[in-house]
Image 1 (cartoon, rainbow, N blue to C red):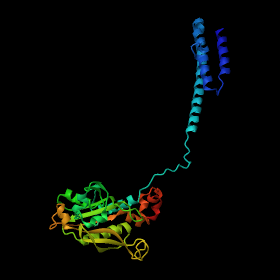
Image 2: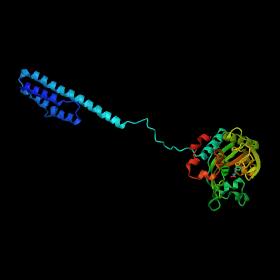
Image 3: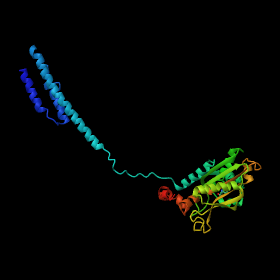
Image 4: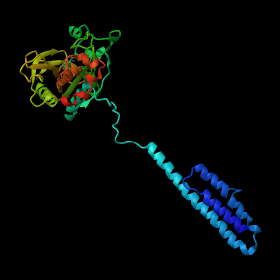
Length: 349
Ligand code: DAH
């Protein structure tokens, strides 16, 4: 009778164990056959009612049924897992052949780039790049540069006052010369440049801006003369604009240098032939400079009998305008990124 029952179960298994079923169906089958009250589980528990001599064979047959079911279960489970995995891989697949979304990365501002180039030239000659405050004392911006109170030269650099007449927005980066010498405490050599913002009460137009960038330079050592300045200017402008660029000095006047000069370079637009940029002279003035005035050295703690130096200062926008062919200084201070980023200009260099 038990054998009959075994055969019956075997038949049912054959019918039930159809391939390609769902996970739910598979789990139901497991409960149906191997659950606590499952068919095979119950069949197994009947072993106690079987006469001893038949127990072994009965047991083997039930085990075979269990084995049949388990093999089926394992292979279906494996197939379902594989299917699930394939589905996931498919839905998460990344199509690497799709063109990427273009992200705007930004690019250096052209003014900043020119300043960096100037810094590199001077650093290669052993200069330090230093910083100074934009809010400055009258004492450093004027007095210690040999421009006492009431001096007419102050008119040209009318600036913005923060507090009374003593604290102002610096009208030039030259006060950083004073600060550097005071810090240097009489020690040499001093080799520094200082790029930074400066302010003047100018009305903005194509060539004036109430806020602009200057780059100041100072060298103090023994036996420094105008020819050292000439050589330095020559290196700077050849490095910035090419080997064929020439520099020349014209006499000028600044209170903090004696003698004072204006540095001209051959026009980078027409290479000296004459054009609108150089007003048909072939030359463009780019720097104010000179030999540091003895009074300035003395006031900052350097004995002018022993030490000498040269100093220079120029507008960074001016250089950038020449380099990138810009004819309005306001371009640097508007918000049109197309005009002030290097991104579209890369091929012009
Ligand atoms: N500070 C001057 C200006 O703003 C430029 C200048 C001239 C700087 C001569 C110097 C210098 O260091 O020696 O017009």
